[in-house]
Each structure stands twice: as structure tokens, then as C-alpha cells.
Amino acid sequence: MMKFDFRNPTHIVFGKDRLDELASLIPLDNKVLILYGGGSVKKYGTLDAVKKALPDHALFEFGGIEVNPHYDTLMKAVEVVKSEGIDFLLAVGGGSVMDGTKFISIASKYQRTDHEDLLHDISLSSGVPDILPIGTVLTLPATGSEMNSSAVISHGRAKYVLKNPKAYPVFSFLDPTLTYTLPSIQVANGIIDTYVHVCEQYVTYPADGRFQDRTAEGILQTLIEIGQQNIDEPKNYEARANLVWNATMALNGLIGAGVPSDWSTHMIGHELTAFFGIDHAQTLAIIMPTLWEVRKDKKRDKLLQYAERVWHINEGSDDEKINAAISKTRAYFESLGVKTHLSDYGIKRGELEQVIDGLKAKGMTNLSETRDLSLDLIRTILDKSF
Ligand code: NZQ
Ligand code: ZN
Image: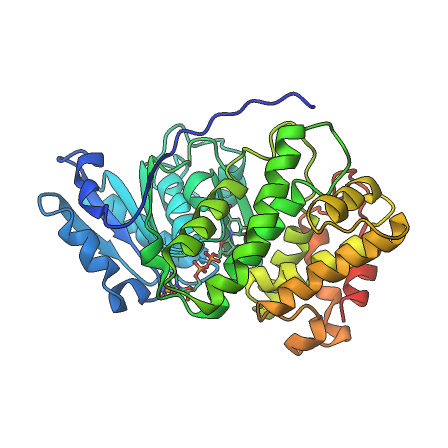
């Protein structure tokens, strides 16, 4: 096992009908800015329920944070924070709203006046001595943003990953019933995003992280068990509660501590979203199975462990087991209603060079757990993803 620090300060408030506890978690003299997305929380009553739970706080609102939250929109919220003297940010929504809120929290305290280098500086945590406290009310289980310190922000035609150790939410309310209104494609996206978060911290090379491996395998097996049920029975509390908790635990630092990780699928996927607008999880469903085929030799030991322990494939040669596990993974994503080939999304081969250019522009020329996934290999993966 490799050296690691593990610290996660987020207070999780899990379970249905607990929003009345919100008021006790935000100091009464705080001016609170409630942030939300394109309107689902208005339509389904979550915003009203949140406001009702904070009768004595000074409340302000900022709506319209789009999917893959955009720098320009978020900077408008920063202006509100500054002009109103906001003390606390409350994100009500999915990954895009929570990530956008983290950015606003950091950008509001950013010291420099020129914003040219803001995205760069923030991701290095420099120039930001302090940030505004954040709480979240989760409405979409997927990204783990409710209990981690990362955010993914779009600027121009690019997505940037920010990590700031101060950006953990102070608290997150995880009420599975607030996710019942999700369309089934968003439920499928959430399941696949969670699945791939686990795989990118697990299907690498052996590091004898037995707790991490067995916990990763437990999450994957749970997702396989409850995936279809979550699509077919959106109001099944136990199934949804398990999805919510697995999504949170998949990307809160626990299973990734002390073991290698390979975020290549995510980095390539972010470019596919930036250039073609494909949903985050769908980009992952396209790339990961093909990446495993291309990198089978590098990942051989863990792919075999994955085949045997997660899919219980015990017959055949090692190669046959690995191939069967990759096929089952692809079939699982497809069974949830998510297509796994670039051609399914109307992309043409000639358009893909811009993905390579996007990665190159960000210096992502040696991705993976072994830092040797070259742009040429990524080109091969994209080519085989049709
Ligand atoms: O905008 P509204 O109207 O609220 O609608 C949203 C949106 O259209 C809707 N929705 C959310 N909760 C709902 C609901 N509809 C009905 N009922 C509800 N309860 O769902 C749509 C998608 O929402 P979004 O927040 O964009 O989805 P998700 O949670 O998948 O977040 C995706 C973003 O997170 C980033 C992605 O790159 C992407 O920008 N990620 C963040 C990570 C992190 N912070 O650690 C890690 C991830 O790998 C990911 O990259
Ligand atoms: Zn993801």
C-alpha cells in the first residue's frame, strides 16, 4: 500500500424528511445564498422545502446553473455573493450545481483582481487563503461531489478539474426521496458514473490495498444488483438509498487512498462532453470498455481479479475471463439504456482530432496509472470506440 493522508470533514445527514435539521447547521446570523440549476428543484418542490426549513435566515437565490457549469454563469453568482455580503452557500441539485457552488465559494475569496488565471490558480489552491462555507442538498446520486473537494468547470470549449482541500461541503443532506423525480436516463447516468469512479480507482495494478479492493468490489456488485431496480422502480426507497450511499462512498477518498488510480477515461470523457455535448456518464460508458481492451496487458492482474470477484467468471483461460468481464461491463451499461459506441451519438471519425488537440492543450499527454497512455494510444482507443 502506498503512503496516504485521509481526512474527510463532511457531515452527512442521511435519510428522508430531515430538511428541518438544516436550520441548526447554518449559523443564524449567516446570509445564505441558495444555488440551483435549470429549474427541477422549483418544479418538484425541493427549493420550497429548503426555504421553509430556514424561516429565520436571510435567504438569497441564484438559479440557472447549467449542466457542465460554465465559468461565465458562475462569475455572475460571485458578483451576487460580493454585493450582498453572503456568508454561506447552499447548493440544491446534482453534480453541476454542487461543483459550480464550490467554484463560487473559492472565486468569491480569490485575492487577485485579474481573472485570467483564476481557473489555474484555484486548481493549485494558491491565491485562495480561505473559502466560503458550503452545504449541499443532493438531488442526483452520481458524482460524489457532496463529499469530496473536487469540481469540474467548463470554460470555453474545455472542462477543468479543480481540487481544493478546503472545498469539502460542511454538510450534505442525502435524502433518497429527493431523487425520485429523476428521469431514468439520469438515474442510469448516475449508476454508470459511480461504477466508473470505482473502476478508475480499482482496475489499475495490484498494490495490496485489500480494504480498498474489497470495498470497491462491494460497491460494483451492489450497483450490478440494484441498477435495473433503480430504473424500473424509481420510488423504491431501499434501492435508491443504496444507490445514493454507494455513489457518495465511491468518490470521497476512501477507496482511492493508498492505491493507484487511472483517471484516463474521465479525462478523455471530459473532452467528449466539451466538444460534442455528450452527458458525462455516457462518455465514460463509451471509453472505459475500449480503454480496457487496448490496455489489457497493463491492467491484466486487476482485470482478472475484477472478472473473478465481481462477475464470478471462473471458467476459461485468463484472456477469456478478462474478455468476458469487459463484455459483461459493456452489456451492463447498455442494459441500463446507455449506448457505448461513439457512432450511437452521431459522432464522425473526422471530428475526433479535436479531442486529441484538447488533451494536448492541457498537457494530458501521459495519462493513466503508469503515466504512459500517449496521445497515439488515445487515438487508437477513440478509433476503436466506434
Ligand atoms: O438543472 P436541473 O433543472 O436541476 O436538472 C438537472 C439536470 O438537467 C437534472 N436533475 C437533477 N436532480 C433532479 C433532476 N431532474 C429531476 N429530478 C431531480 N431530483 O439532472 C440533469 C443533470 O444534472 P447534473 O447536475 O448536471 O448531473 P450530474 O450530477 O451527473 O453532474 C454532472 C457534472 O458533474 C461533474 C461532471 O463533469 C458534470 O459537469 N463531475 C463532478 C465530479 C466531482 N465533483 O467530483 C466527478 C465526476 O466525475 C464528474 O466529472
Ligand atoms: Zn464521473
